[in-house]
Image (tube, rainbow, N blue to C red; front, top):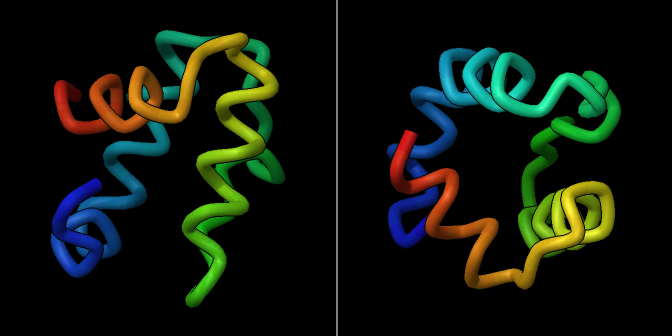
Length: 62
């Protein structure tokens, strides 16, 4: 998530891909709110059992 503007622009597509890959994720888990990117990463980290860097790489690779 190095480019937040790019992520925000493609978030609906990215969110769909994450939900396909990880069925346990909900819309609430994937809520991207301005200024709350770290909170989003933390939620994904907890739900997926991955490190913050693993989550960032996972999103970047989608």
